[in-house]
Length: 337
Ligand code: XMP
Image 1 (cartoon, helix red, strand yellow):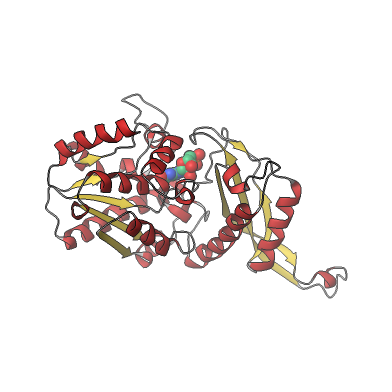
Image 2: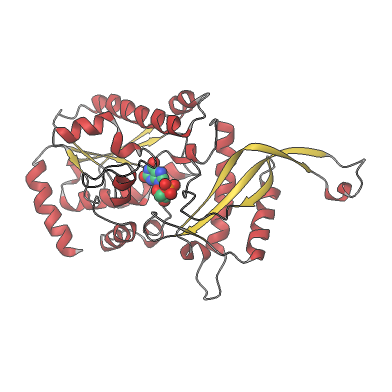
């Protein structure tokens, strides 16, 4: 890692010179590690970190991201509140690829607008936290044709393509697998809790609210997801490790269907008095993987699942039913969209 940082330092300094570098921060591990790397190599004034609150982030994410970046010594942090723009653009969109495209394009156009507002020179470099898996799954693996599983916005967008042609894209993690990104992050002094955070997709909750995305649905998902993650952090496996650390990636998915249930359990025994409720269905996902290319379903103890499910339905009243996704990758992908 030390040698890698030294090498990157020489390469990047020669390429970039005194030009500004703009890094889009997603809130995930990858872009945080790139931020730490750039802040180590370059003067903090040269690095501009832009984080867009798309309204598709996890609970309390924006506050947490700002705190992390400040701790890394960032000088120029721009938090853009773009919640309404994203939610408006997603209105009525149900096709997964279309949703991803809408988000990717809007991301770039807002970035362009906000960068113009910053007044950075046109020669600015665009840094990204793309890792090896992003290229393979975007059909761009070292020139080889690979089936496009999904278009990842951080690789396929027109502005990135233009910047790439101009030789102005910096992707220091492009050859890294996820576990290597984590090692680099630890080496750069990022807190273990942040480095060990599960991966989070660029389009955020939009790929976890299936079908049309609305603020209400995002709010429901955020609450349920926060409970799930908190439970995983508090529960231990037989070896005493937290379930969160034992799992590679865990999250919840809000399905576009509702199902019937009963509100009052004592009344449920009496068909006539039972109050019926029409609640959303939530899926829990938990997989183990080394790089996201293939994944195995996490073998929970039944009791953990039952207790987590109960806590979610007791606390998030809009959710009426919880299921556990038991499909591995392949044939399923890790995310549902
Ligand atoms: P799938 O769902 O394709 O995902 O099995 C493999 C891994 O990639 C993450 N993922 C993304 N990461 N931008 C990202 O940065 C994206 O658009 C994206 N889509 C999926 C996913 O969470 C899993 O870890």
